[in-house]
Amino acid sequence: MKKKLINLYETNLPLNFEIESIEMPIDDSIGKPLFPMRISIEIKKLSSELFLCKGKIEVSFIDTCQACLNETVLKLDINIDTSIKDELSINKSEEVIDESHYQDLKFFDLDKLIVEEIYLNYPSVTYCPGRVNDEDKNLKLEQKVQPFKKIRDLLD
Image (tube, helix red, strand yellow):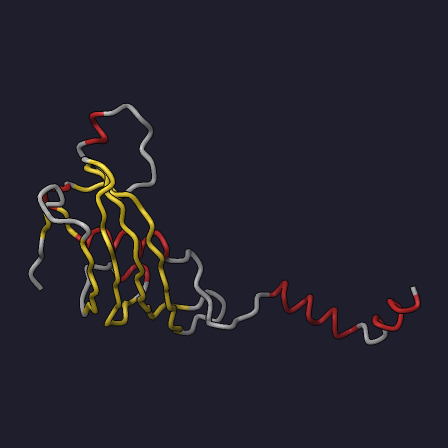
């Protein structure tokens, strides 16, 4: 797939992207991506050097469950609401670097933004869907062991 770079300074905004991607430069260290991934993004200009990106990324991964070590499908529905700034503005100002996405806005690469959002939203621990952790199991077991609790609560 040929990369398309966008000059955000010279492009008519807002930009709207509705993409069903069949490939993305994602490292297998976080899980194996299942394609297609669905991407819906809008980029607006807020000021001469500040842009806003809103949208949604839907992607699934095959990963290993940390409890049972079986392969499981992990579905991510990522809501994006981030600002985009030129990476050159990091050096110009002495402000603290915030949680914006920084990139060369003359050669803006949408794939970099998407991959960054996936990495930021990928969970550090993966479990099978619907898996109950041990604390929840103990709580449910405790609730089952007390059959007369309702009667005692009524008497109190």
